[in-house]
Image (cartoon, rainbow, N blue to C red):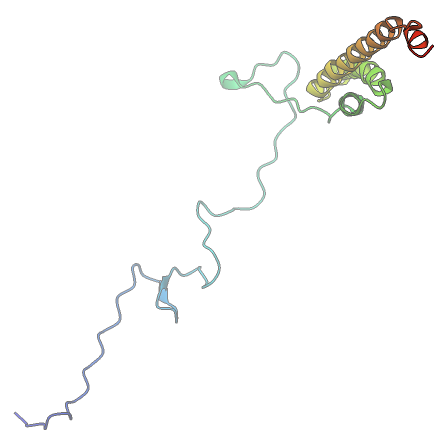
Length: 165
């Protein structure tokens, strides 16, 4: 046993580094353990790895063909109908009630085209029709109010002329 004076103790040995959580993992300079394919600063991807392009599917089933397990193939629409969009926009804007008339016309045209071409936008066409009819209703009420207001004018008699004279 050897004697060492106080203050001159030999340096303590550093603790051994922790073992990796699994073989192949490596410890970065930030002190964290990373799997073999991970890089520091890049988020890890979870889930199964990508194996290339998905398999090609065959031709769609013919009319009347049965599909397995009650599956019905999805028939995508061919986009939103332009008349439906115009009907809704004109129904909102009104443009001195001309927009209301055009919203109604475009709404009915859109309904026919949506049925014929399997397009989207039925809700917008409905909104345009409702707003167009609402605008025409307000126009009719305004015309009635103006007509009734002009026929009930108050006529003053010659009361003022007898006061001063």
